[in-house]
Image (cartoon, rainbow, N blue to C red):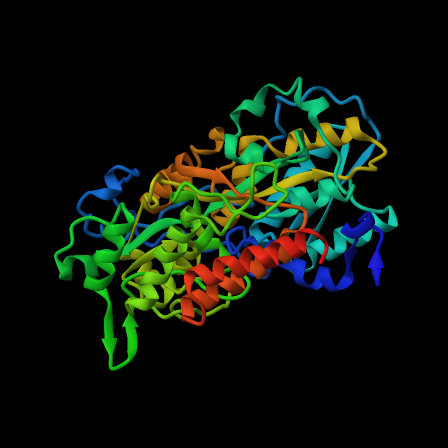
Length: 483
């Protein structure tokens, strides 16, 4: 069955919906705000010394005495933003769909909506869904003409929804929205397709932060984390621990599987100065010297037995193995830190975080969740008014930073208490300076697993790096041509 969201060869089938529900999970273990069944993770069990990307490269600091950090409670009541213009839509109701919120974040939303609606102007009617079913629900709603006025969208949604008529361009409103310049350029680019803006980011995440275990560094006599590819290779060989043929402590680690294996590869491509698509995003460009250097960098760790070919096994297939305590250093997302703090606090207390690695340049891909406006909303002005209320700094912090430990989407969110009280999360937030927009196309939900399969094949040694990249471009080109 094909639902009529698409046009021509770009129609999206129900088979695709099953694969695409990974938007908040597979496309982003990051913005895996996906733990709607969980309450907000406990505050950090220690208050580490302050850090910055520069300071994180110095000698690791010993863990301080346990003192709970106390970010503002996610359920705290926040007054409606005074900066929003007086309502011109009295009596109108704007429907807003939230994806994958924790219990505390939902409580915050309910409190905010109660106060917002008490103003007597545009009313907000929230509804909540999980990430796993979010894409199918919204596309089914769009096909039936009953989608909410505003909906949360995941990491790869911009070109998909823009190309298939599911989202409204909002450039006409941004012309007079003075705060738009406060959003990071990489976040702005993520919501832009063919020169038009189709969303407002509400949370972001980076996965290429360098995490390291301070106690393991101390035992090895290592005083600072790696900053370059060569240093990462050298230190991985120094830190790996084995028992027979089994790696018991990975000297480096990242998640590799046939769904999200492309994500560490894309970070490495950016660090190598390459691109996975050409400038107008009409063809893949993985079979290039830059991409070959990137994949070779990753494959080296498995070939030299410093990590398992698919990464250190974790509790969930979409998570890295950091919380297992069996990784000395490696690539960590903010979700790795969130879950480690919640489920393995002793590992979290021993964790340090530094800036991403440098190949030719220092960079990591930015993953973005954003608000989108339904293309057929009957009340665009009222919808824009409600949207402005949802993107004020205090609301963004209350829902997404305090509730989900997400990274900031705009500069005004950088002063969130979580970032100020937890040195690891402060480094993660500061690492936004290395963010580059993710390269996405309308076919990305099929492209991502196709690329991931080739990365995994190279990591396992089933294909040479050169062959994997050739096959990757062939598979992606076929997908982009509708094959």
